[in-house]
Amino acid sequence: MSSASAVLNATIKNNLPMKDLQELIDRIDPARIPCHVAIIMDGNGRWARMQGKPRSDGHAEGVTSVHRAVEFASDLGIKYLTLYAFSTENWNRPQEEVDTLMYLIGWAIERELPDLLRNNVRIRLIGNIPRIPEDARRRLLGAEEATAHCTGMVLGMCLSYSSRWEITEAARRIASLATGGDLNPDDITEDIFSSHLATAGMPDPDLLIRTGGEERISNFLLWQIAYSELYFTPTLWPDFNKSDFASALIDYQQRERRFGKTSAQVSESPLPDESYGLSD
Ligand code: IPE
Ligand code: IPE
Ligand code: MG
Image (tube, rainbow, N blue to C red; front, side):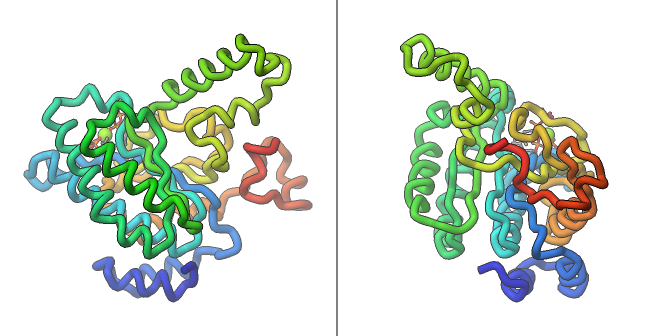
């Protein structure tokens, strides 16, 4: 389902003045929807602190925000949505917070599964999944398997993920192919390298959104965002609603993506959104 009316129907559940959201949606050019949007979902802890609540409440509220973002992206016809849910560095948080996050992730994926299936959304786990505790890991792998046949939006869930981990793993695999005689080092191209990353087969993100006000990348998709448009918003992740998402898309659509060319060249022959990455 990717029509404007589907988006409008979905807004009824959004607790927003529908008129304002619809005005924003009307400003989105359906012909230039980014193929792949990646989001660094930051600000749960600060959201909780501002409400005088424990950090875990911020993470729980963050799950509601994930539901909203997935529904919105899928309804708009975004083909890939990749969410940074838990970084390699996040293992260094207090054990109690890590436990809460793992519990929430496992619980949320199972709760969301019927909706994901209904919306034809395919889950793709990205990260060092064997490091996830058994209970959450079982639920995550179950959801990935249960949605494997879905042909709609791909929902990338980055868990126990860091870009340097991913790049190191790819280098290790490529080196082992080379030492085993299965790959000639002279034949290693950008495409071959990409095909050994955890995101193999996915196009590079067109748009990277970070909520929560910090303007940094925090070890996320360093290779893949070589030519992504970056969008930083002070909105804390639990507050990030469909209007905020729509605003990010409008901002994105106002930019000129040049991929190294001049503005005149680009206006002569506009480049498709996915023109940088897998095949170049
Ligand atoms: C993002 O929110 C969630 C995760 C990193 C798992 P934070 O927990 O980082 O929230 P802040 O940055 O402390 O507000
Ligand atoms: C980035 O958020 C990781 C996720 C959103 C999962 P952090 O809150 O962990 O980022 P830093 O460490 O402050 O940069
Ligand atoms: Mg943070």
